[in-house]
Length: 119
Image (cartoon, helix red, strand yellow):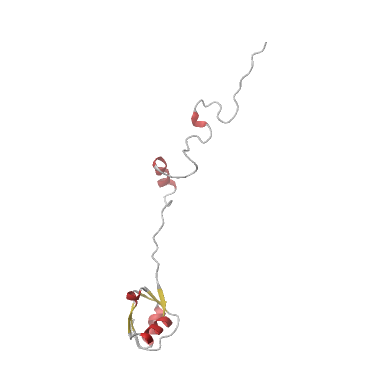
């Protein structure tokens, strides 16, 4: 009688350990979690992962809106008190105003000075 041949088949055959079965030493599903032992891999191969640049939202106001504010209030306007950071150039200014703000668009500055005001 001939001896039965017991051959192992499949990917893991011939390795003799658990390491080569299925997911092997991957440790989890894809890059889920990325803690502890995967950290060094991430620093080397994907350093931007998980980092979000903090973007400050700039609140802008147009000249036409400033002109409306000036008609209601006064000739001197401090926009940082009102919660605005930047002056944009859309619209016209009909009266001389002194406007205080952190940033001005060049065109807006010119329009304010043409009307006889200060930026």
